[in-house]
Length: 149
Image (cartoon, rainbow, N blue to C red; front, side, top):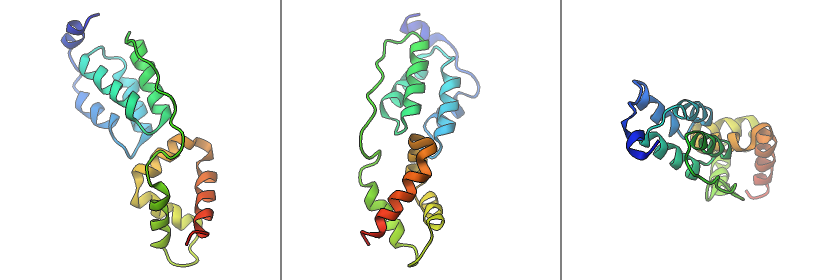
C-alpha cells in the first residue's frame, strides 16, 4: 500500500479519542492500548502518530509497541535505542522540591502520594519504565534525598 492508499482509508469514529489517548502523558497503559488499536489502521495520520510516539515517548515499552505496530503496517522503521539516565531532565531537583514541601519526618507513602499528585507525568513515566522495580527505585531515591536536605 502506498501513501495515497494509506491516506484514503477512512478513520474510525473513535479516532480522535484514540489520538488523545495515544498522547496522554499521565497514563502509559492508556497509550499502549491506543497504540494497539491504532496499529490496525493503515492511514498516514496513524503512521505519523505512531512514528512520533516511537521516537519521543518517555516509556520504552510504549516506544516498542509503536515500533511493532509500524512494522506490522509495513513501515520501514528502526527502533530507537533505549535512553540511558534520567527520563526527565532535572528529575532529582523536582523530587527534592516535593520532599521539601512535606513536613519533617514524613513517610515514604506520603512522599509517593504527593509525587503522584504533583507530577503525574513523571510518576507515570517512571512507573512504566521501571515496572515491578518502581517502588524499590522510588523508595531508594527518596531515602537518598534525605541526605541532600
